[in-house]
Length: 216
Image 1 (cartoon, rainbow, N blue to C red):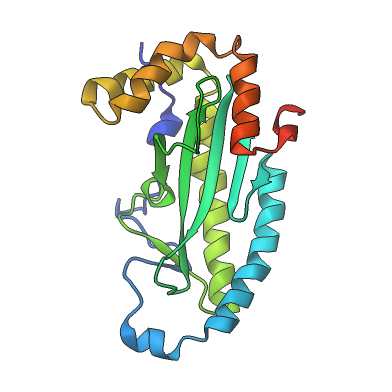
Image 2 (cartoon, rainbow, N blue to C red):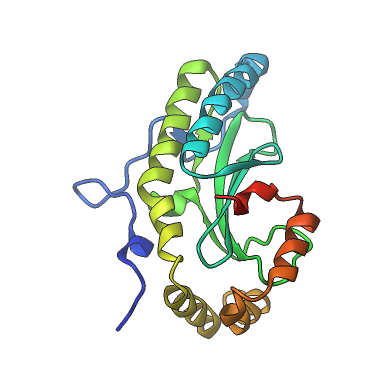
């Protein structure tokens, strides 16, 4: 029996089966004309305001703030759930959201984006960036992100509280050759998830993770 949860396949689709672009999001880059009239100072202020509210939202979902734009929590089988807001590199005042998981019972020198996706995957979209050009647009964008996290991302994370579901996912990825240097060692170590306290403590220190993620 396939133990993979339906949540893994859950995506946002319209009634006609065609994905809808969420409020505040864009599927194309900002044009030169748009960039010329963009008030970057106002955009940064709008992002900062919405980010404070987003921090509270993530806290309510059991995530701890990590560095500047990331959030983490640990599931029942010692796998780190990671969500990161990534601003577009050319300062177009848009951002995307990276979703990832990694085992804490394997040594890591940095956050590994192995088993993960961008939030656009869960919305059944290709390339998707959330606009924060002004306060109204930023609010729409952050509300769309919060909705997607609540409806699709957290259920996707939660299915992997079960090691058998995780094993099935990793086995499939190994067969398909997605990221063998990451997936195979994880698969090999999965049964040691509850007997690697030393490695977990080292990872917390090395990655500078909030210690309180294990206090809940």
